[in-house]
Image (cartoon, rainbow, N blue to C red):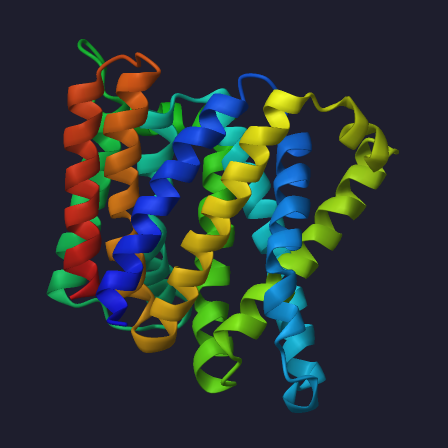
Length: 291
């Protein structure tokens, strides 16, 4: 299947998952929610693991994949905490800034040259980010100060930095080391489930209490979100296998616009028109960066 269509499918299912996540997070804490979704997603990923040809597996590749899931696990938790503490039309557009950060860090650390298109795309990202927090009567820099200083946005910033790292590692594993998408998917879910179990064990002491304390309505949402998560992650993995990370992420971030418009309307969020316009500007910037 064409990588663009795969990335578009990933975007639609990702938007559906984000809206569902926001709805459930009104009723459950971010860590407990992340733990439960990771476990149910693992159950749905068992077929991927069962179909793996273990004779072809390189232990080093699996070790690198596990290391990659550590920041990936924390990033997922940070996203859920962001959705819980911020309106969906505020949190999701900021989470779409990953490709811009990749370009900036490559310029600063690796001395990669920023093209004119990349520079223009980054400018659009900053304009969109500015519009999300702008309010009448504010000073020019107030929106950026709010994002940097407000504790509610710290989870967003942390998730962005972690996603920047994991996006580069994804391409490395799927491209250079030829890890099969099904194998990648199955073991990624296994490792993330393990990671969340350990985190809950450390913080909450008893993971099984979390399982018992969750009511049936929340469980139904968890199952739905886990299914949506499996679909959007697997289609994204397939797309990344065939195209550059920047291109895939740019298309997948269309999910942000879908979630902002539908989710913002559903949850009766304020300044929705401005935030939707800001999201369009951010996504335009992503496409400019991706070339």
